[in-house]
Image (cartoon, each protein chain N blue to C red):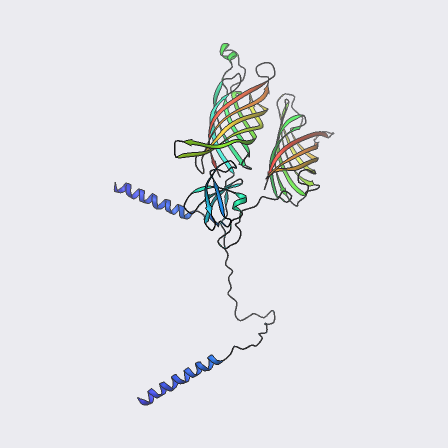
Length: 223
Length: 244
């Protein structure tokens, strides 16, 4: 028993001595020579660079939507119209916009009075157009609904050109418009527009410029 | 009743899941004395809230020059690009607010314009990719609307800008190939309704404001036909474009 205790004490002393010895040892100042190139190093450094991913900001400069309303086709009555629109906002003032829409013309007063006469064939009554427009937000502002609600709005003017297909003929048409955009939420806006499509035609006899005015209500979303 | 409650709870869980599934939003620290938040994305909209220095602002999305941001206490408003660009990330680096593309070195360009092609009204749209600062590849789609016919013309070509560092006005020249399709409105119909064309052009372009520019172009086309003669066509146009 005594021997065993003694040996344990001896071992403990030796071990602590070792520890002391090691503590006293100073770090060596030896220059570590780099391993020659080409030889694989024994320890691969496991350094991983921390990749910080910065979230991107989503740009919502595009506006897409649909609209419907009434189109007054000169000499052919007022008829329903529906279309789609796509806009790109360049700055807070300027935007580009494209429209595609269709309607169907009614009858002229001549056709109403004299049922035997046809000015335009049935297929030719289809009125379709596309437009490329430049828009300018003239009067930006806010619209208040009661005490607690305010919606951003912009009164804008547009000018552009495009193709009107009527009486189965494509005509070059200019258009001028004025509209109001009411931004209801981050993603939904309501539009009220009045636009005039002007083109030259000889459908009702002599060649003249005709005004085709539309009033529409539209909904768009920003993306 | 219990079923309804279960449904409501399920929907709730679903919506929470959706919120979590959303992408992470950028958070920036205000490093100037304050950051102003306007009620709308425009210069006239009043300042409705001010975020102080060292406060964290969440950037929701951008529209043109303005960024919709959320203040620490939930207020939302619009911050100007130039002011938001002065904020910092949590790490102290400048916030990654994209600057305006440089006019001289921009890459993409999209535009539309009016012109006259073969004495017909022309509606034109184009896209353009800058191969170098002075050489661009351009792709044009246009419709010419006349009294006798209606033509669709597409073209692809290379354009050289002579002095790209001149911002407000710089002459250009280009060379390319085109394709034309003719739809007859009034008889007689042309002998050939589809033609290949080649063109040379002289033009100019200039910067207007921010990302907005103008372009003017005169083109001379040679129409290849199966007849024994070449036909010549003239075109000029003026357009407005946006660059990225």
